[in-house]
Structure formats: C-alpha cells, structure tokens
Image 1: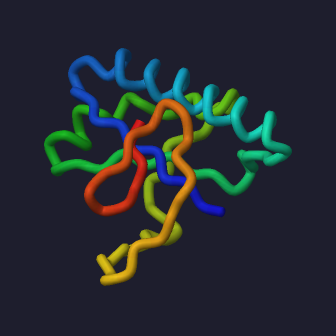
Image 2 (image 1 turned 180 degrees about the vertical axis):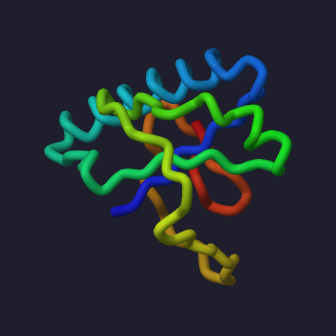
Length: 108
C-alpha cells in the first residue's frame, strides 16, 4: 500500500502547514495501528516541490515530522509516480483526516 500526503504551504510561514502534516499523519498512523497496519518510516520520503524561488525560500526546512518520525527533506526524489485517469473506478478506503481529490488521491 502506498500513501501520498500532500500539504500546501507558504514558504515564508510554513509552520502551520508542517504542524497540520504532523497532526494529520499522526492520526493516519493511529488509524493504521487500530487496523493492524503499520507505516514504515524507513521507506518514507519528504520532499518540497515548487518553483526555483520557492525552493530557495524553503531551503531552511531540513526535516519534517510525519507520523511521529522525523524525516529529512530529500534533495531529490527516488521516484515520482504518475497517475493517469482510467475509465474504471474502484472502491477505495477513505482514511480519516483526508479528502479525496478528483484524481483519486487523498489530500490532508
């Protein structure tokens, strides 16, 4: 199972967004534990995406807290999954503290 957690933030005031990511990911971790599942922090990555000026402004953000683990912000992605829409729709699990997007992803 793969989960993408996305959070929009202002680089000049990232604290509220990073707090929201920490709190929501902790809630997801709790849901996983209650359902006999586990998040693996060793296989998790944190990355900041943006324009060149936004990335320069966010350069001081070195780590983020996700599901109770402190993750270093990766300078590069190992992989970036591209999801294309398909005609068939499958039933999915809606995790707490997320909302589905039109592309089938969950956003915190």
